[in-house]
Amino acid sequence: MRFDSLFNLGDLSGSERVNKSGVEGKEFEQAVNINLDLHTLRTVVLRIKEKGFPSFRENSLTRLLQNSIEGNCKTRIIFAVRTEPESLNDTVGTLQFALDCSFLKNKVSVSRVKTIESLERQLADQAQGELSLSA
Image 1 (cartoon, rainbow, N blue to C red):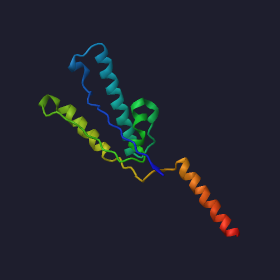
Image 2 (image 1 turned 30 degrees about the vertical axis):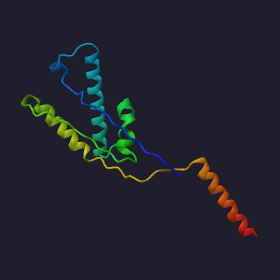
Image 3 (image 1 turned 180 degrees about the vertical axis):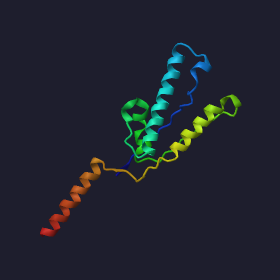
Image 4 (image 1 turned 90 degrees about the vertical axis):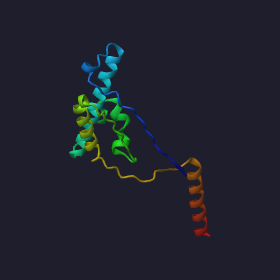
């Protein structure tokens, strides 16, 4: 018997106000994509919180994190905030998102994956049991 596990580690700290940061070119595109991914992730979390149907297919981040959000996984999310007064709105938004994520509850159980060898042993044991019953 084999036990499988999944470990996702992501750094989504690139969320920022594009107009404040002054980034351009590739960095601008990257910041826009990160913000879009975070928006979609928040939408999924809110749908789950409201007992609705989350659409994990909207982008690659939510699809990648589907098992961590709604699957058979223990999930921990770490949120980082800034303490500067000019970051107050962003900090409040991050803390609100953290509160929404606190409503995510997964039912975790051990996943046992049977290997070919263990299935062959199981079949051999069943066949041996049937032979001893017929004798």
